[in-house]
Amino acid sequence: MSTPSRRPVRPSATPFRTLLTTGLAVVVLTALAFAGPAGAQAKSLTVGSKDFAGAQALSQAYGQALEAKGYDISFKDNLGPTEITYAALENGDLDAYADYQGTLLTYLGGEPTGNSAETYKALVAKLKGTDIVASKPAPAVDVNGFYVTKATAKKYKLKTMTDLAKQSSKLTFGTTPECEERPLCLGDKSQQLYGFKFKDISKLDAGGPLTVQALEDGDVDVALLFTGSSVIPKDAVLLVDDKKLQPADNPVFVMRKDKATPAALKIVNNVSSKLSTAAYNKMSLAISEDKEDPADAAAEFLKSNNLT
Image (cartoon, rainbow, N blue to C red; front, side, top):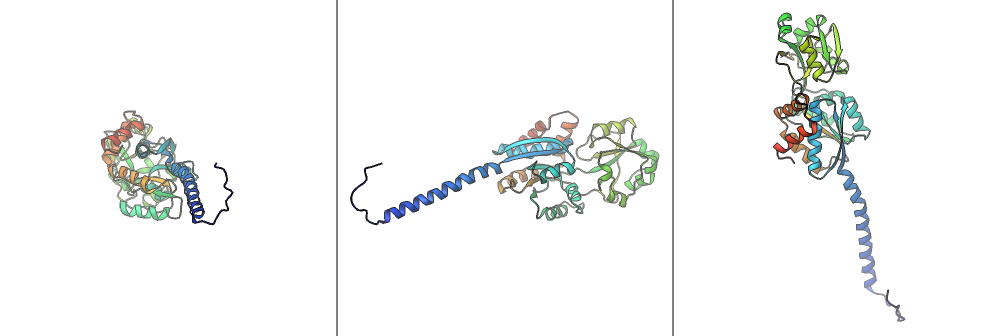
């Protein structure tokens, strides 16, 4: 500091400009101090996944695409069905995860249709006023499928799910643990449309190897498998959903609003645009059949589509 002058100090514009500049600098620096961590926080996400191959691949694909663009991503894989993953998203244990728009809309009390655009519009309306938003839906479709072997189809003359309902009291059903509570499986909507009364219900896995094996071995007569992500036995027949129980169940990436910045949504929407049913099925089967790690299957998809 220089030696103070003994001369009287005259009022000057200089001190005012200096104070004004200093004040602005303080404001700017303070704003940056707060904006920095907030920005960093928005770019840090915990991404979860549901508990079957297709959903695991999807969450990895969306998460890795964000990671490639500078986001700090941590994964919590194989958590469980929508009842678990959506609750974790709501309470902040997760920042995002991949779900299916028809399934999620049904869980939220909405009425999905077979039309993708209509179902997505209804989902967006259902999420309005919450802290959660959804990406645009991918073209891929993965829905519940009721499968029987060719021998069973011939024996009981089964072509449609209406045919199945008429014969259900004679048949055993292998399915997911939560199927009886799910409207699109054996829950209320399914019962309203078809009225299934199976002789026995085996709670196995989510369209995975246990259910496939049970159908192949004849331990169950009917199996719930996923049309886009399960390994479908060569001898299996998909019964026609003649009363349109299954909706347009296209994949979506659901995120907490504070993480769903325009930049983040642009990245995940780009991923959605490349997720055809064929691409989705390839990833799913690489995981469930070839025992490939979900992260590796997703990485291969992203690389082949120039998304990383």
